View (tube, rainbow, N blue to C red):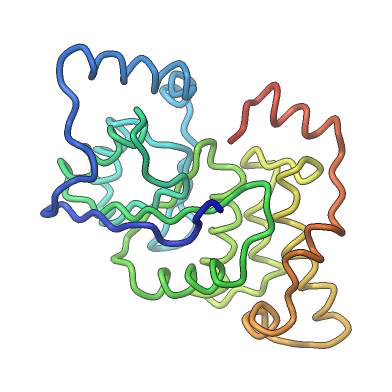
Length: 234
């Protein structure tokens, strides 16, 4: 079973999970990040957006964009893709450490309703991480959208109905695709709350049924074709 939630925290003064690449492996990894991981598009366009006085959201940052984040005063980057022996993670870890930024690896899946414990782990993380902070996934559309909504609700007290606007076509999120399971998760709470008023956290802990929400969700094939085959979303 794939693990989600908080995986690891790498501070600037701690040993990295992976050694810094040099020579030909470094050049090969850079090419992979730019082309296989579509980083070349993020060279010209990154979705970095400030959503509060202390939090930004974005797509996968390139090394120079991590330096830019440090210049903004960002102290923590939350990587929603998770750590791994791959090009984009190796460079992210390296440049976070170079620029004095703590890297938190908190895994969220874009095509699954979140586990209750993952939602509550997110609340704990938002209460304890060092701000200012930036969260990102690959494209900055789906996982970053869900976590931005949870951040605005748990940290800033925004109602779910307003916070869920972070899952928006404005950021490239397509709710008709498989990734719409994230909207459906929040909409399931709103539907329940309309009939039986209940705080979101209580609903997650005591009422929310991940399997039932998953079975009730319906995607549109054409939207999933766009996100999966054309945009190659993760």
